[in-house]
Length: 64
Image (cartoon, rainbow, N blue to C red; front, side, top):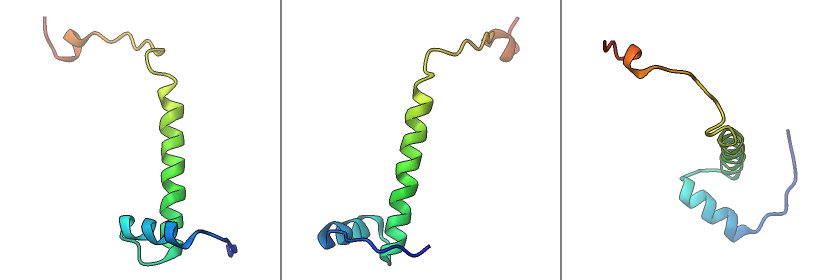
């Protein structure tokens, strides 16, 4: 999809440098993927300590 964006050149150049991206499109795709990844992790963290798995480690480790 073609989109026209007005982005700060210095910000885009810095992002290209730190991500070792050759094109502006690649660095924007990487940024969007990272944003989605962080959002997904944040959603998963909401469940920390709230899921009762009822796991017996002795049984899993084949201890008697």
